[in-house]
Amino acid sequence: MTRHRGATHTVQRRVRQGSLAGLALLSALAVTPGPAAPADAWALVGGVVIDGHGGPPLADAVVLVEGDRIKAVGRVGQLTIPAHARVLDTEGRTVLPGLIDAHAHLGYLGEGEGISWPEPYASKPGEHILPLAARQLLSAGVTTVRDPYCGLEDGLRTRRRIEAGELPGPRLFISGPALTGSRGAEFVGRTEWGVGDAADARRKVARLAEAGVDVIKLLSPDRMAPGVAEAIVDEARRRKVPTTFHALSMDEVRRGLLAGASSLEHLEMGTAPQYPSDVVEQIRERNRGLYWIPTLGGFWAPVDGWDFPERLDQPEPRRFLPPDLWSALAASLRPPRNAAEVHDERRIVATFPAKLRQLRESGVTLVVGSDSGTLWNFHAEATWREMWRWETLGVPPMETIRAATYWAARLLGRTDLGVVEPGALADLIVVEGNPLESVRDLRRVDAVMKGGRIHVRDGRWVADGEVPERSARGWPLPSR
Image (tube, rainbow, N blue to C red):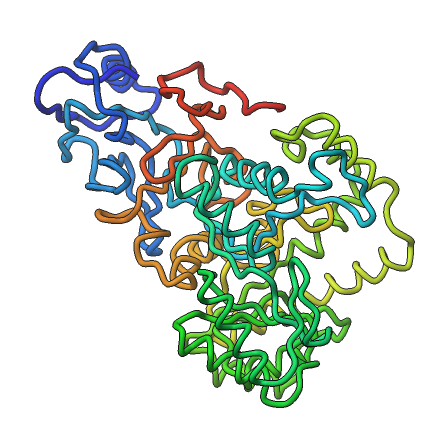
């Protein structure tokens, strides 16, 4: 977009969508010639801002970005726009913090079991699958991801490449391999390491922490020898690394709560209608500082896919995927699994409304995590679908949005993410519509900025190295 002339420019009046004055002003902002501008200065002008803190939205807002940080937030007519800033018109749309998905699996793309990947994806998934997943997530407005189950080298390499600007993708927080009680101490796989006694567990925590992981994941903690889960939590705390426990069974939930987990992953997947009273009481006792990532989508996505297999003909799941890769993925999902498994999955999700309600009433901090990459759970749509599921179960849109921004950032130990305020990292998304009416509007991504750099503009992907000048509204992302 062309820039303003002069040292500073103040928008003198409110820009009203559809008004002649507003249209004239936006036209002037778009076409007035000016000096070449640094690519790291932006003004997002005219939209409604949801800042992540949960207060009233700010209408007719201006968000100024310098470098990778937000410099100022104010109203049209009250905030001076620097002459060198590029203007991103957000009139009629909503600006909010980039989404944070606290449970995503970049090593998978939503495929079924037994898939036969073509080369080079089969032999080098870390070099080829993870970058595609990262790009899909970023294009959907997810600017930060926590992957709690990944290969150590794959995760570290992908994180380094994203941080270096070599690979477009969300900010990446990883666990590396999960420490599991279901395998012997000698087992060292790509995504799981078995643990033996407490001393062995401490050594493996030290190895992961020294490698630079962001969280230690415990898998099947109920099958670990007495004292082992506690030793993992203690060693991780000593090294200032949080721990998260797999919580698909009541025994895993109890073990995680007693051992002092920082967070728990998933809702319990049994068919009991709700959490028993002793578990609820433990949650209430631990609710201060405890985070829970329910991951409804990991179970609901396959049910949705089996009910409506035409999802495979929609553009979002295949976004950025080469044709041969997509063909293999789609083939792995047809036909659905056997009828008994479909029935079991439906019985499991039928218990989720009551269990989610129990967690909300307990006071535990809920955080959005989609479980993207699992069966039928495609990265390009998993996060907004997870949030929509929360909405269908009675969670108000603002509470859901904060769980995918403000509270998710606090889970990661970051106060400079998940908010729109001066000093925060300029991770911002612009969506068509009003997600406070329904979070389904989060699927209508118009712009994505991460660290002050535009990756999506006017609904289209901005190619690497491209200077994102204004394009015709509604241009699609690739493969739509």
